[in-house]
Structures are given as C-alpha cells and as structure tokens.
Image 1 (cartoon, each protein chain N blue to C red):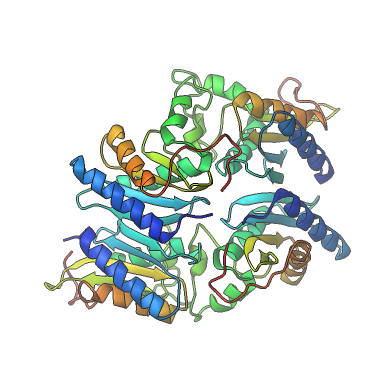
Image 2: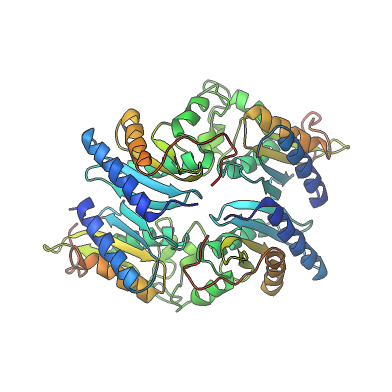
Length: 144
Length: 144
Length: 144
Length: 144
C-alpha cells in the first residue's frame, strides 16, 4: 500500500505546524513505498539546499525501512556501511527521514524533513508521520 | 519575487480541481523564479513517470519564460533549437509547463503538469497558474 | 595554447556590446582549448536556461573544432551524426558556439552564446571571437 | 533580489586583486540567490580542478546562507551533518564560499573561490564579497 495524497497532505500539514511551533522553516517531502515522490512543500524562507536533502532523507528511509539516523550510525568511518551514501544517486544518513507505517504494520512511505538542526528536522518528521500512522516497523521482512 | 507557499498551494488546488473535472490523475509541480522546487503533488494513481516530467516542465518554463510547448515548436528535427532538450540536465518541451506572472508583470515561478494528454496537461497547468496570476509575460526582458 | 583571461575578457566585452546593439540579453561562455571554462557572464535578465546552453555550445565548438551549427547539420534524423548530443554529458548543436583561432592558426578555445534567436546568438559569438582572433581553422589536424 | 552583472564584475575584480596580492591563481564564481551562475573567472594558470570547486562553493554558500566552512565543521565523521556533501549533486564544505548580503540584509547571491589553501581561498572570497556588500546574514529567516 502506498500513502494516499490525502494522507500526504495531513502529514505535511502536521509537520508544518510543528515547524512553526519550533520557529523553523522546513522542506518537507513525502514518498510512497516505492520511494517515489508523492508530495512536497518548501516553506517560505527555507534553505534552497534543503529541497534535495528532504527528498533524499525520505527516499533513504523507505529504501531501508528505518530512520535515516540509524543508517548514519553504521556509515561512519570504520563502520560496516561506510560510504553507503554513494549508492542510489545519493543517500542522506543523518536524522530527519522516517518511515510511515500504517495500522497493519505495513510501510506505506516515508517523510523527509530538512531546514534546521537535525534534532528539529527529526521532530518535525515525527510529527508529520504520527499524524497518519506510526513510525515503528515490525521485524523485517516488513511489508509494503 | 518568488511564488509563496500559500500561492503555490492555491495553484495546486486549482490544478487538481481541473484535473478531476477532466477525469485525469496528474503530477503537479510549482517552481520559483530560480527554477527551484516550491511544492509538488502526485494525485493518487498518477503515473510514476510523470513525477520527473512535471518538474522538468516547470523548470523549462521558468528557464526560458515561455510555455514549454512554444519551445517544442522550435526543437523539432530541422528546427532552430533541435536538441535543446540535452541541456540543463534534461528539458521537456511539449505542452504542460507555463510561467506564472504576477500583477506587476514579474515572473514569480512556473507550474508543470504531467499525467494525461498534452492538451489536458496544458489545461490543468493553465487552471493552476490562473488561480494566482497570469501566464502572459510582457516583452523580454521580463523581470523575476 | 589556451586563451588568456585577458583575451577572454576582451571577447566577452565585445560580445556584450554586440548583444546590447541587438537589444538582447545573453549568457556568454569562454572555454580554453581543453574545453574547460575560462570565463562566463550572464547579462541581467538573460534566461536562466541559457547558462548551461552557452557553456555547452562553447564546449561543443572546441570538442570538434567547428561552429556548433555545422555539427547540427549532421545530427538531424537520418544524418551521419544523429544523436551525437548524447555524448560528452550533453552537446548543443545549433548555432552560437564558435572556435577561437589565433594568428598562427592555433585553436586557443571557443565562445558559446545563448539568449536569443540562433541568428543573434551566432552574431554575438562571432563578435566576441573576432575581438581576439579569427574563427576559421586550417584543415584538420589543427593544433591546440 | 539577485546580484547584478555590474556588481558581480566588481566582486570578481576585487577578488582577483586580492589573489594577486597573495601570489595565487584562483577560480572565482558568483551565483545569484537562486544558486544560478552569474559570472566566472579562471585566472591564468589556475587549477582546472578548481573550476567546479569554485562553483560548488558558491552554490553551497547560497544553499544554506552561510560560509562553506561552517557547514564543514558539522559534516565531519561523527558530526550531525556527516555526508551532506552527497546532496544537491555535490556540495563543497571547506572554506572559500561566502554569501553576499546587501545593505537591507538580503542575500543577493554568493561567491566561491578555489585555487590555493583554504585560508587563501576564504580571504579572496571575502575580499570579493566585501567589495559589493557584507557577508553577515541577519538571523534566519533571512530574505533573498
């Protein structure tokens, strides 16, 4: 199952509300479970450089079914996934990308947020995801 | 001046309404006057291949300040701009991309639509652009 | 021999003067004989889409030691070089790119111009090239 | 507001003067606030490899509204933005890219310099930027 445009809009609205609460300007991307872009918003005055980062975070989260920051722990020098960012035409492996999981434990897509500190990016992504589902996947192989 | 996120949402909503009226499923992209993505919507069941085409149409329209179909007339075999699609990491030169011009004659961005016939794509793009401005640029040099 | 920055500036100034005389706004690129960018100018209000086209025209002219429009005659459907634009990360094969040749018949670089009709683009490129040399190469193998 | 070609020339001239004072050969790029190239100069004998680096530094500075070296502090192994260079078709996050800010606190573009040590690159970029404005942005959200 793929996230619907109606749910994508709900997630973006919730993310935007959280971004405003934090006094930040964010780029917010929603991809479906095939990692293809579903919806995108660049808030006024958000960094232009965040357009691509938000989308890459969302793709990275759905590519591996986990928050981007989890991959980043393994991609450091000496880590088991060192250099994984070179794959898939560029991954982003710091926090701000989160899978979106529906009530049946199925991953319907992911949200990626960029525009502030990684802590704020992650908080805004979480607010967006939770508006339409959960972010915790059951044990792999999870379903899409 | 760049299109605001509020106006981008208005344009997308109007484009979506037109798409539904036509019984189509569209990808709709809004870029600012620097050709950077501002907002994007993929309606449910729209072609995945249209995600990139809609964005490239919007960029192409802002790159040259004219509807994409106008460029396509000149880029046919034997035409003066044959092969221009190879520039800028890929242009789309058939109809569906239109500049967005504000009341002062300033190009604030562009809309790109893909997902049906080029006639429908163009009609949906025009409905989106007209919701927040006009599509006719004054004689070049227009301002951004 | 490569075009010097002093000569590149002379060529751009002459091209800009011609562009103004024609009432146009141009992107003007100078590359050296290795096809590497030497100098670039985007006149105010020139098309953003012309940034890349001007550079690709200059590269194309130096890649093959001939005006871009000459290659375009051969790259039409059915022509002997059909599809050559797919090489070198994108060529532009319509007029506006011209080799720059010094007094010894050595190609020192090329100029690429984009921003108006191909006739105007070519005229502006020629004005730029002639300010610092000629545009006619001796029979191949020419020297660089 | 975008940097004008007149101002871009002033910035490049000041940067070149500083480069000569330091006995260096630089590539100098100016981009507008949409990260699109406005003007570029490669001084004689500057590294060919610096052509792309100078442009990427300018883009990186405008993408995030800060000197490139600031981002580099956060993108080291273990840092919060580790791997950000994989976004936006390649960022450069060591010093030499600086935003250009006008008298109203608006970011009109950025300058990127490459060709020597990062200290020299940064000094030359600063000389260029200061010729036409300041380099200190007000608190975000800054305007473009």
